[in-house]
Length: 164
Image (cartoon, rainbow, N blue to C red):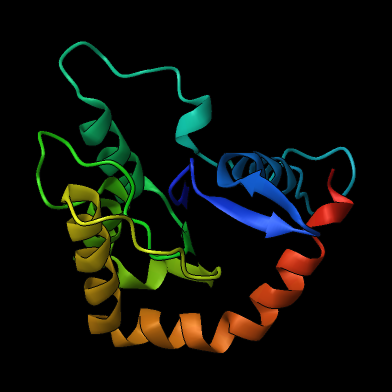
């Protein structure tokens, strides 16, 4: 599973690119991995952009949390944005997914740091984003992963242009 705010943007060679586009590319690359030619892919990768929708008795929020909990590996594209909240609660879905997974299976989370997004104007989204950032710093292993990976992610972002 790949977790991040879909509508967030990153800059690649002076051009703004939606994270949803990056997520689709990453999913394609992940699902193309095989041990040898002609074999089945090693991984299935869930992103909500390709999701077929939830059953009538399940909200989008519940669906995302269920996918996060059942995933074998959760890649967090972290830019400090918590994404949308449900019912005006002070927690975005990215924060909720991370919290749900770390509460039970912290070893299956991998953080990929992106440049931190600017905080929005005061209001619910800012409250959600600030809470998410504070939460990430409480998880020493994830915060350490993000710090260690910063140089790798800079190279990763520089090379994004090769995909489009």
